[in-house]
Length: 457
Image (cartoon, rainbow, N blue to C red; front, top):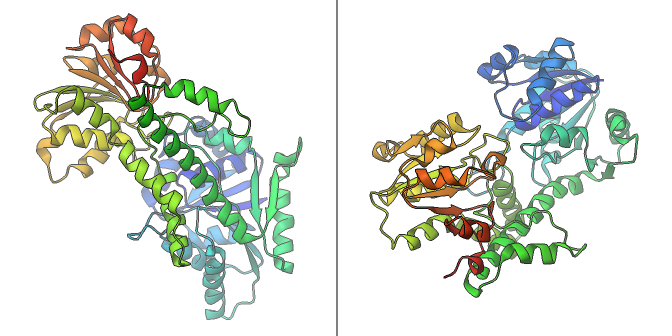
């Protein structure tokens, strides 16, 4: 099938590459010439395991191309995926300017029937706005082409997006009940047939329910994270081990083990903005989603938990202290620094007079760019960040090690070397990578999240 992907960001590039992998003829459009040049030079502008190989293989086979030619992109695809960014607006709502601009471009150039797919995460009712934008462009040039707007939200995890796309646990598609909608349903069914050979993975529903499903899923996952983080903070006070609690409640099949890990807060491009956008949608209808408001508040506070533990351990006197930071990205297997907990921690340490040495296996370049923005008005703080060559290099002369991202490379370090390089054998573990009892045996002072029962004196 002929497919056009509008937007070559995280969702668009993964979607285009994976659909090409299945044998489709894919045209990837982006208005950013720099990004298109990178892709046409055989490089990938984001870090996602396995994606570079998929893109390279399908470029060589002629099944995927990259261009800034809007008219050619509309002419190419019978199915037009809109996969552009929907950043949060000032009021927390999703900014749909790029989605609607893409819709207007389709309406401006289409000459025959098109299935227009909202792949971007968008609020309930966006399909209606996309439809109006297309109709206005068609009317402006007195065109008679027909179309149907479909909602097909993505459920890709950063760091495992290619695997998630190629082996989905569910495919959500929302179509309307018009003749055009039935035609769109048939085309979408054909497109996703390869994923349903072993069992049916597609959930068909109306458009608004499909739009809602994406937000509801991310809100639920964010809620589980904040719930466990709040329990972890209580566990520190009452003398319980949150890891034991996690196993205890996760064994209940009604609860399960996923997204029950206590830590130093969630980040990334999805959970923060999607929770806010869902809250904003509710406000538009005169409702307040009290649980989601609490989820946000808990997460914002949780990003400060490591800083609070460090300040308490050093009697609120960290001026002149030096700290090693392992992990900068908001999660492993990505270089994404958006809403990362490391940014909150490092900002707090630097503003209290400390210096830091940081290391991340993938996101060092992105971290430099982000910190230059974070501290553009405080160059003296920016100068207090040293970018280490490797994890052990970050430890040299540090007063403590702090772990923010749970990269596999950090799970089994040489603890003898860790102790030798640190001024004091102190670890603040924001992801509970290590066992407190083992740390005690090694003579390391260990501060986890919700595990004080095993470290109290």
